Image 1: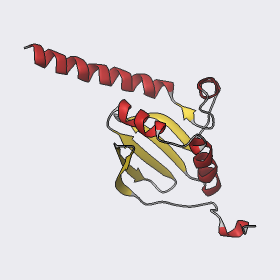
Image 2 (image 1 turned 90 degrees about the horizontal axis):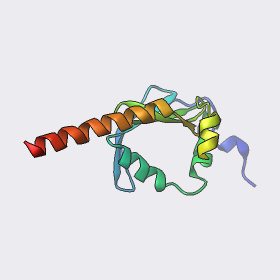
Image 3 (image 1 turned 30 degrees about the vertical axis):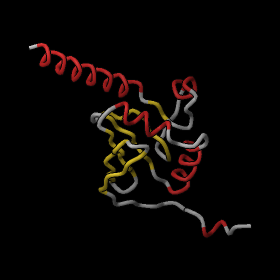
Image 4 (image 1 turned 90 degrees about the vertical axis):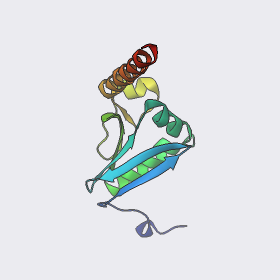
Length: 129
């Protein structure tokens, strides 16, 4: 039996400024103490990293972050698409998508899709000139 006092406890503060690679997808990680920002350059990179999590990975991460009073924002193209941990407020969208305890941010996701479409259209326009 493990001693609960030896496990993670709140509050925890994190100072980070680094680059990580998850399933071949690069992400920049920075923090403000209680909130970590994981920034992917494209939606496909964020989805690739998500698919690399074990089946119970989001639940385990949410539990750890809740215990340590930390929050992670997953961002793509400067838009928050998901929040997990102490500051997450999953609602009907998260439950409908089956991602609860992760808070899915529909507005952020739609903003990313719009930005990625704009990049694709600019690239196509340049190629056709």
